[in-house]
Image (tube, rainbow, N blue to C red):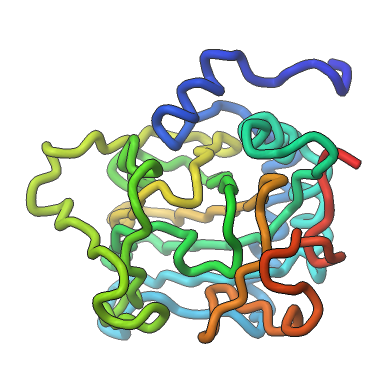
Length: 276
């Protein structure tokens, strides 16, 4: 395959733009899946500054998250920058990448739910937690088999809606935007049949790509084994810096005074994966 050949069909790109999500099989090779496992295990062995336990102390399982580890863990760096994942992301973000602008890697996110974890990841959009405006896509890549009952769940078409109020996952506080400034998320669990909720049985190396504004959540993991996921996130060429008056998730404190508000994310923290 040459660098100029598309990895996606026109129909797949159209489906992504319509639904705000796309399930792809075999995005990582078996060798790359093993690299991802090594990278995740390195994260679990040595906590980073942003490591957090996102489950309660009474949970029979455990849900651990970490962010922004690619600069310390070479396996994550290789997958984020040099696998086919950024090529898929580039094709999906082409609509919002003006000529002469690059697609950039934004950050990595490791999510591990141990077997028996009850903690649900609440419904939310990602972008209200971030320090960027414009478009982006996330690749949610498991390195363990994930049955549909333990898979990420996404509301198709929700990326076209307005920003919803981001709240802390464990206690539901409005930590980022002041109360009443954004529309609240609907109670999707109260009437799930009213929404086009997508999930899938996934094998290691499969991926779900989804828009930063697609509403999504995840059940606990009431199964044996673990659900280890590497999520890689990319910015379209129209993405610009949107510094907030609060700590974003993940935080990028080192950008204060470096990238002006409204400027492209032109910084070594966000390496280009396509374009000039």
